[in-house]
Length: 205
View 1 (cartoon, helix red, strand yellow):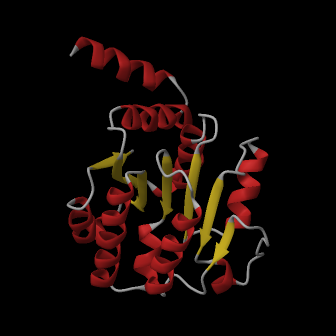
View 2 (view 1 turned 180 degrees about the vertical axis):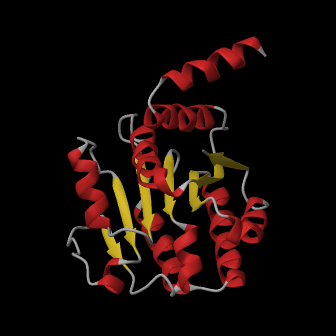
View 3 (view 1 turned 60 degrees about the horizontal axis):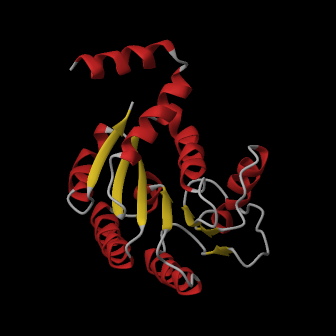
């Protein structure tokens, strides 16, 4: 108990951003080698949580990642990573929002696009296609940004069914998966439902 209190006191002395980074790191360190986790994030920290997750996952050499974005364009995410000197050459981007918003599309082999976040069938197929391209699936990570955006474009039951399906595949492929979602009372029912599919649900405050 004293050790835990000491850690919490130390966090309070840090900036809110650095304390957030430590909480993410602590969450990941407590997870098994392969897992799927639902990460609930306060809106003000959402972008930072994404960035920190990528940094932590690709810290090991030759780590392969899949970044599924329904929230911000993949070009924006790629430029953000580049500005932080994060090498994204081993990250496959699946972009469900750029075509919908008319954002810039990057014509490179690790960038792929679907028309809209409301086409869950196309998104599911694209996830399968990308994983077919990954030869070594032993140490792959997936970041899904975000379930909250899917709920803007789709009904709750459709999103729950979709998440259940992809989490099953993540578990089959034995990867590390993080599903990001805004921590909201509005979607508490969906959160409770999706939590049942995941190994752990973690609230990042």
